[in-house]
Length: 330
Image (cartoon, rainbow, N blue to C red):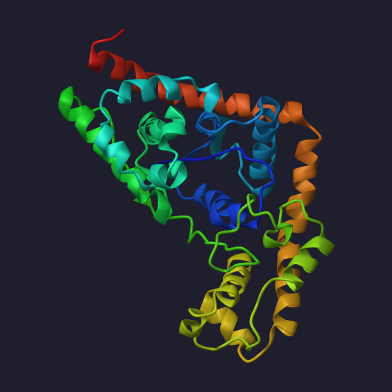
């Protein structure tokens, strides 16, 4: 089993990134052969200042290592350091179809009504994503609900390429369900919106770099309702902010929603919020300290990323060479 996954190197990582993806990556290391990449080529779909992009790559790498990604267990690298990603993407552009890409919901959502002003990279994003996966002949890809369509497209591209050129080169990947459930963390100010760094309110999210006082303050001021916590999980459905805080507590402690409610049922947020703040501080405090250590040694970060890129290229090169041969190129 080989698992491939990527994450865009954006700054200001928050609790949603950690509980929604990164800690699942950490657990996956013990279940499969894992390649993780910082998707800096994907970040070209929107304009970002070059210096900001460079610093964000290191910052993301530091956060991943601080969270528990182990370079002795996994391969971690910057996507742009493995040019085979871009080369295979261009080859697969001959296989992918405009109709397929036009139907991608992420393209529709991100481009909105300004499709004529959106970048070609945003439109072609799913083909590069397919190349990211097929380049390593990944058998499985961890995905959330919003990414299932991308995996289906990757499978379509793989099967069409193999059929068109009469080869058995690409492995149509399957969704990876290991690593435990990925938590869907919502805004502390609006339980119906995902936690996001683009939210104008700093109180909507908890950054991995927030100190203990900031964490406690944000939890204390998180939006709730006046009712105590229920015993029945189904009663959380009409209470999105309450459901979010209970979900965060469970994701941090490893407990199910049922277990959290069994402990706090009947109690108000005056009791629950301090317990949640303590749990978050226990999780993020050590991580924050490790993050600072990695930040102080950017040369070591670069060295680990370069080593990861070299290992990734060893796996990628044979696949790309076979793809060139299949289409009649050298």
